[in-house]
Length: 146
Image 1 (cartoon, helix red, strand yellow):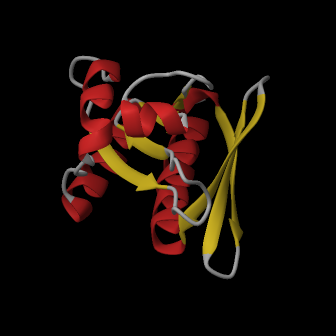
Image 2: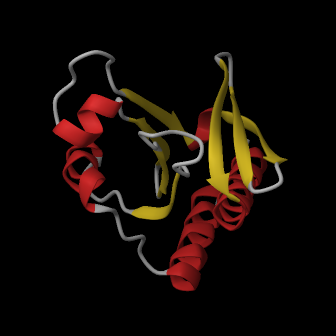
């Protein structure tokens, strides 16, 4: 029953938004990271005001992917100085989400079961609120299933 609730949330989000289009810089990398049958539902890119090498956060039908490329990797395709950072968070591990509103940009904080938290800064307000709403609905469906 919980799986059906989970699937209905994902299906309703897909109907409302359609499939998310990935920017060219991230397309090849994300294709390699996705499991068979996994689809991207939502995505948001950091503003260039927050970072010269903006990261992206994707919500798929199975997990949350956070990709923070190094500046060298983003513009040259080679990790020279700093490594790129990839974070995978399965929906069953999310305990709480929080949205911090700034004047122009927002931050998302995802608290993870027994691991602390992951923070993603510099998102546009509309994209951040849509992402938080989706993650909260998924977290509530997971709580109901337990």
